[in-house]
Image (tube, rainbow, N blue to C red):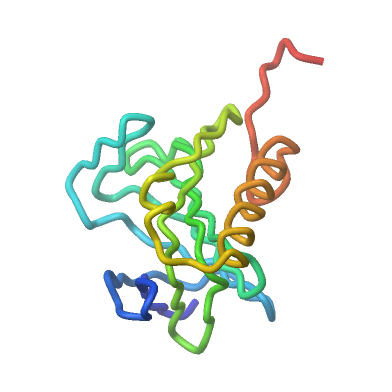
Length: 162
């Protein structure tokens, strides 16, 4: 398992935030990293809460316009849900992942409901029509994967459903 630094970049490629994780899987077009949330003691988002020590299993793709963070509670390892950043495809290289964030986000809770977040921030970005279309396609792909409970989403279905 190798140490990895994840670099969140703005539209002009400037680093806005960086943190460390450990590589747990790697394919030619993706990398999965485990990291521990340490940016804040507690972050209340309304639809979920992140706490210092939460375990993030992060999936970055060199050929998709998003990443997926599977989030587990610090003290119980209970799945909180999936936070998906709509972003340009990741640049994956030895010891580093760099990704340009496009502000639009998607939250998938463990039961499968989906929230699209930060529409106003996304609308304000100076993106080309093609980039906007790629971002919208990424949201639709995440929604479809979650609805089908396809990896990386393992949706807990109501046991009374057929």
